[in-house]
Image (cartoon, rainbow, N blue to C red; front, top):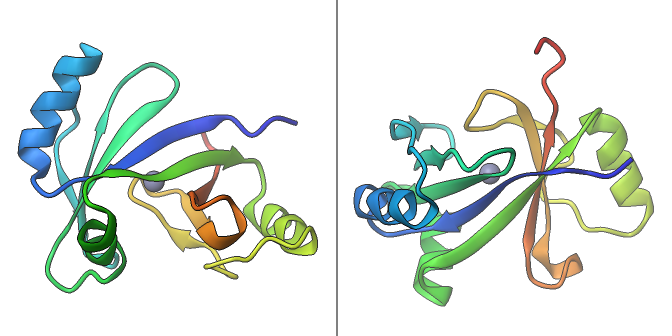
Length: 136
Ligand code: ZN
C-alpha cells in the first residue's frame, strides 16, 4: 500500500506573512494559525487539495524547529506520509533499518497520532508518519 503524502511542511520565521504568501502561490485558503503547545510551535495549513502545505513557526522554548531555522534557514522541514497503523509502521520502519525519532507515537497538530523518522536515514529529509483517522 502506498503511503500517501498528507502534507509538506515548511519552517518559517513569520507564519502570518508566510501564510499570505503561500495562500497566494497556491491560490488556496489558509487555516487559522494554532499553537501546538507541547511542541512549542505555531502551525497553519494551506488547503491545496489532498496534500496540504503546513507552515511551522517555532515559539519560545522550541529546540528542533528553531535550530533548523538557525542552521538551514526557512524551507522544507518535513514530508508527512499517511500510515494506517502507526505502531505497525514504526515497527516496520525500524526493522528495515530506519532510525526513529519517536519510538512511541505522539499527538500531532491536527489531533492524529504521529511519529518522526530521523533525517539521517532518509537523505536528510525529516519524515513524519501520521495515522489515518479511524473515525472519519
Ligand atoms: Zn507535519
